[in-house]
Every structure is written in structure tokens, then in C-alpha cells.
Amino acid sequence: MNWLWGIPLLAGGFGALNFAIRRGLAAPRVIESAGPEGLPWRPVRVPAANEKSLFGWFIPAGVGSPALVVMHGWGGNAEMMLPLAAPLHAAGYSLLLLDARCHGQSDGDSFASLPRFAEDIEAGLLWLAAQPDLGQRRLGIVGHSVGAGAALLAASRRDDVRAVVSLAAFAHPAAMMRRWMAGMHIPYWPLGAYILAYVQRVIGHRFDAIAPCNTIAKVACPVLIVHGLADDTVPVAEAHQIHAARASDAVELLLVPGSHDDYGDIGRQIGAVRDFLDRAMVC
Image (cartoon, rainbow, N blue to C red; front, top):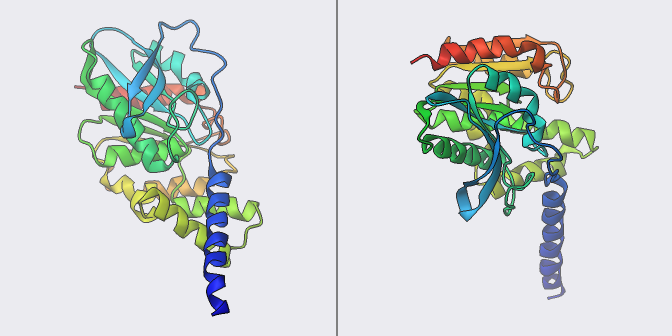
């Protein structure tokens, strides 16, 4: 019966591996160091799933104004989306810049994931819809990277979103993770394959079901896909892949100079983004 001793040893080994995977993939928590200076902002707490709350900055633009939930990417926070705040606010948009769970000043949770980013975006939409001075029927989403994938996922299951701006979205989580594992010199077989299967089990979603290249076909509202031509984190080919999977001509593709974390130099492209939002938000 000596072989029975191997069962707890094997279980312990998998337990240690699973712990290492979750720790290795956990998002860094970066706290904001500055706010949206020069704008009429106020800090807010937004109720979220699992009895958690999200930290955010609300920047109102006036009675009846259209409103946008703005979501950062993995390891980011609301401050990292500030380059968008002043120009969008000047264009007449109320803004809710949120920290996702396990990020910035929002509550922690057992883990962060693209579907949980989407839940947090939806919490932001509900919060905006409850504000009496806003144009509740003119709500949109702006997301970056994982936040962009989450924006598409959230919009694919709602009928109250008028527009989505996707900044530097990846096409499929498995491809993104395989690039990360290659950079960490983790062999795909068997360890990489186990990591992908384990992550899907933990988050409770198959990657195919949440992949932007699949959810884009289920989004009913207009979408602007913005991608930097020098993005070496998510190849620009993935923007083309998402765009090619669209089910509507209302999905537009804007390729711009820039890399992944400067949102494709979005400050220089804000006119095109504003024009898209204005067209989509027309009553």
C-alpha cells in the first residue's frame, strides 16, 4: 500500500502549483497618486458583485448629458485613464472612471478576471443610470486592454449601451496568455495547457465564451476599435481579427500611431473618438 502515500503528495503538489499560478497571475495593485485636476470631479463608491464596492471618480458634464463608464486594463487604475477625461468632458460627456475589483482603491475579491471586469463595468452602468441628472438612455463604455474586452462582453449582454470604445483589446484570452507564458519561458505542454485549463475553471468561463473575437458579433450597439500600430503587447493583427468577426457595419476600426499603454496615442485621436461617440449617442 505504499503507493497510497503518493496520493496526498500528488494532491499537495497540485495545490502548490495552483497557488503559484494564482499568485503569478494576480494583478498588481497600484493606488492613484493624483486626481482629475481642473475638472468638477468627486470620489464615489459604487456597489458591485459579491457585496464589494468600487472606487471611482465621477465627473458630471451637466443635466441630461450622455455618460460613459471608463475602465482601465490589468494592473491599472482610474488615474491611468485620465488622458481621456478632459477632452471627453469638454465634449459634453459625464464620466465615471472606475477601479476594478482588486485594483486601485476598490475592494479586493478572491480573484480578478475579464468577466469580473465586465461585472464591474455593469455596476458602473447601473450607478450612472440611477443618477437623476444624466441622460440615462445615453450610456456608453470606454475600456482599455482587459477593460476593452470586458466592455465588449458587458455590451454583448445588455441593450442599454449606446456605444463602446475598445482601446487595445486582445482577440482571445488564450492567445494573450500563451504570449505571456512564452515570455516567461513556460512550455505549453504540459504546464501551459494546465495553466489555461486551471484559469478557465477558476473564473468559471470558457475563454471562447468571453473572447472579444466572439463577443463582438453579439454587440448590438456601435463599436470603435482603436489600436496602436506599434503595440507590441497585443499585435495589431488582433484588432483586425476582432473587426473581421463583427456582425454589423456599425463596428469601426481606427488604427493609429502608438503602443499598448498609451492607448494608441489617444490624445491625438480624441477628435475621431468624440465624433464616433457623438454619432452613436444621437437620440
